Image (cartoon, rainbow, N blue to C red):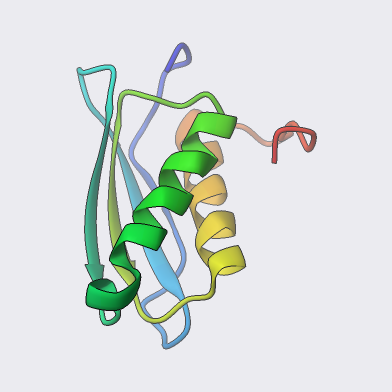
Length: 98
């Protein structure tokens, strides 16, 4: 990530939601720690969605801790985007990327 990143989060631990915490790391890659009630069935799909979202936003050098409570795809994507924007201190997102 070229901009300075802070620890940030988005979402809740309510049913049908997801809590996403972003933590900056010293490596170039992306780490994902996933805890989900549906991980056995949808874990790979959730990870792929998160990686795709980060790739579109050109984000690397972060660790995401994701606690999923059965959120739908669009909710997961929105929570990841919001957590990243908060971590970057962005208040005017590039809607073309999102």
